[in-house]
Image 1 (cartoon, rainbow, N blue to C red):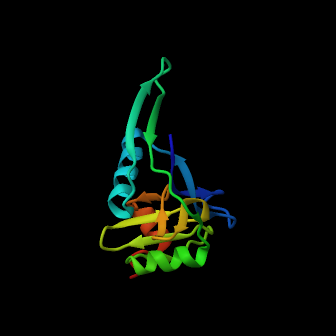
Image 2 (image 1 turned 90 degrees about the vertical axis):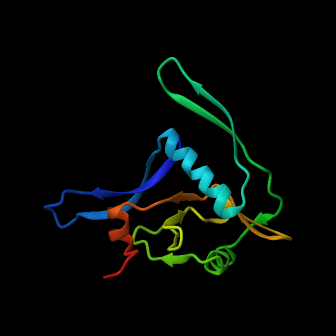
Length: 147
């Protein structure tokens, strides 16, 4: 299973040490497939389902194929320029993650970092970036739709 971002409340709400942060939680198989389909659509990736195995204990393993992308890990400046040029907006995440949001598609991109974005002769190729539609808590926390 992959981990998807969600808001987690850390500490007790009645204490002054209460804070919120983006944390990563396990995803369902449907969330996993949705992520890869969105990556194929938005980034021109070519992830394909290779196998699904249900183990005796009820756990599920999913095998995929994904192209090998030549190039070198992109630096954060190149990643930011790419996403902004492609219509994404960089959001401020108080918990420190780099988060982009695409208002046209209503989806956010998290984990758009050097290990998941390669720079090649043809440009920047994101892969393994976590795509997710934000829920109300993430919208509020990241101030996606300012009042």
